[in-house]
Image (tube, rainbow, N blue to C red; front, side, top):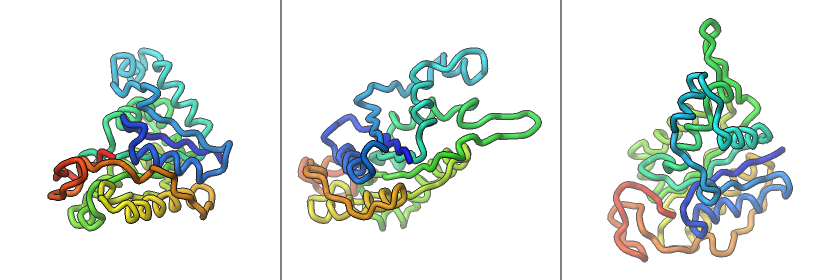
Length: 232
């Protein structure tokens, strides 16, 4: 079973990047690929060439074709991302906008309706969130994220919903508590993908200064924002 882990964070030493590497280590070697969209320089902008391809008047750009070929060889897709304003970062959203398009992820048939083409693919989510689980539950933020991605993208394309495991309070100062949250989320995804149960915490994964996240909290590097966002 081939697994593709896709992450989008500008800092290769971020908590998000560390979690992606930890998950890769927890899965079967040789059956997992880790893609860092920021490091690869993927362009998230839906441009004129994408528009022409959408309208059927042009070919898909080469970078989009390359991403689709990766996914064609994949059984499990895991998206590991920091939560920005209750959703995924623009880089990852642009990847989805450009890659999960008609003619590949789905087809619109004027007579038969929508054909959903990704039934072979199981999609898992590992969002890295700044706020506490109670805040997400109380305000409906987790359900909003699930609706956007699980229903809006995964279901629409006919893919299978896998495991969704949040890492909450990602910018707290308690490294031990944060390590436990990270390990728990990684274990849940690893089990869903391959039945793996033993996950070692990666050295340095839970390090880093707090910059934004839970409202009203002062982190190691300054005052934390009030938008639930995680810069980790």
